[in-house]
Image (tube, rainbow, N blue to C red):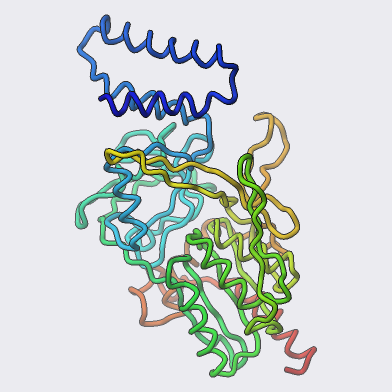
Length: 416
């Protein structure tokens, strides 16, 4: 109890820079008065510790959804996730317009097999509304013992009625890279996430594809939710040279920090097309933005998710943690990747952020759903569970087909 109180005061002082000193003390006194009167007069006995924890969470609520105060169970889950294996559904989530929203489901996971899609809005968990829920509360509800079930209710754009999914939790093991030759000259790499092995796996894939006769490359970042910054930067260095700018960060108390390519790279000239969609986020946006702004690759698909900010994790002791946004990422041309809301809610001003493709191809939701479920079976037969989409109902991946057409055209033009 004492620890929580001290943490609360620490937070109040930390954020006092935005107020005058008198206002700061006045608001702290006001908080203490509310606590005192509630303890003494509320109709039932109250737990002071719970009230203080709620106050800390409320203090951070006006900030972005990625800044979180983590109680011990949530902080522990964060540490487990960074090890790459955990019990859950296999989805990356964010908060948009106060609703829990799917960034992307991870390939081969329970959510992926069930047909959950990027940008699906999770409006209920076990029948309870998620409006106003925090990320840590959502994670606490969605994760659990492998083999147990959880029911989520999805609102999907273009679908009139909500959809219920009952999904069995499982241990989530992340496979990040798959590759093959699409034609005798066009290589294809699907990069699902940026973890500790991503750079080595992509390097190996490129080497194997080159041995197989690769003359051009399709790098598929669709539904890649991001991950480790250093891995995204290292993969960019495979294709960018001459000290080119890859990405930079900047924040209120964080001076500009640049990440640049080396003077030489292994694949400086191979023709490339990068595929993105609304499920491409964070590290995927950093990589796509670097290749696009340096005119190193053609980016096709649809606008990306718009999530790229720098979070620092602070251990507060006693099992508590704080994840706080300290800076934002910008592409080489100065484009802010983080999605920002219109300044006026009723305004027609569009949301900003994300990576806008060179060639925009919008795929209807019903087609995207089938593509997502059939993707593994068609591109990598025998490596994933049988597709949920019957062979006769499978649809063409028009984004991938367009990429192949473009690279074939380049091959003809340059006689490669």
